[in-house]
Amino acid sequence: MSNRFISATSAVGMALGLVALTAPPVTGQVANTVTNDAARSDLPRTPDGHPDLQGTYDLATLTPFERLPGDPPFLTKEKAVALERAEARRRSKDDEPSPADRPPPPVGGDTSAPKSFFEALEKAGGGAVGGYNRFWLNQGSAYTEVGGQIRTSIVVDPADGRLPPYNEAARKRIAAARATPTSTAHERQDGTAQPAGAHDNPEQRPLSERCLLGFGSTSGPPALPDYFYNDLHQVVQTQDQIMILTEMVHDARIVRMNAQHLPKTIRRWMGDSVGHWEGDTLVIDTTNFTDKTRFRGSTENLHVIERLTRVDDKTLLYRFTLEDPDTWDRPWTGEYTWPATSKPIYEYACHEGNYALASVLRGARRQEAEEAAAQVKK
Image 1 (tube, rainbow, N blue to C red):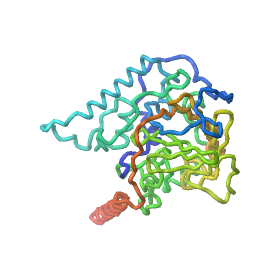
Image 2: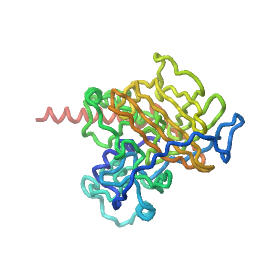
Image 3: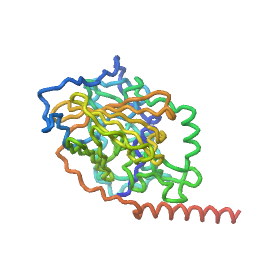
């Protein structure tokens, strides 16, 4: 399947300036949910005695990755329910049949202001002419709740729910590499604001557009919701290895338990993940990234620590911390729940060299020819 939406992490950034939750201020700070490492007797366990984390989980959520400007750290139950119902009504209206006598769309497409966070994401993804209709979307329907708090961002540290700013080294590096998209780079629906050479070769297109990795860091690490579709993840657990399968682009991460990291000369697109148990919490340490993924503009020296803890028989708590001194001057942390689901994981039939990628490059050559012809006429 060709992804016709921009990656969610990029879309979130675009949406921040468009719409915010209309929530009244709620005082208080996000609770510290670092889990107690003491063993619990009520958890299902594997034969080796560790908590059984196996299952299929749906990562879809209404909670944005970063907190929208002006929003409190969490919502009241009443406000969350009101926002969830409003979003459900909006999606239901989208599902209604289009009138046969409807007028043509306005010239230039729909440029009206979005009225909700998800409407902003969809408008950013599809552009003024629109993207997929509602049939193709499978988005979250509820906000993430952790420790009794209904969160307004996955990012919890810094306390404002926003990523730390890039440092000077990162700003210079990212500006110099604009023609080589990162794994979380967005797919644009128009020809504007693109760096020179962005369509010269397939290697210069975003990895998700090439069907190499799921967009928006859905494959991880860190594993994030993409806010559009294909948010299922499956955990398969043995004593020596743990596999995390991502529905989108069927990415599979293998966590080697109680192992040493590979030599720095061996690097992987999703990094080298080694794990160990701290009490009932699975801790995954990932290094050895390549310069092809560069999550959020980070370097190959990115260091990710993930912590997976079973909260109850239907929920995992996923907490992650990222550190890269060449990108941010401080580490930052996010967390959200992984609710279990009985939904099956279907094949994600997206492969490198698909017809859409060829069409992207062919369209760029056509546009260049038209621009050259227009210059000759002047």
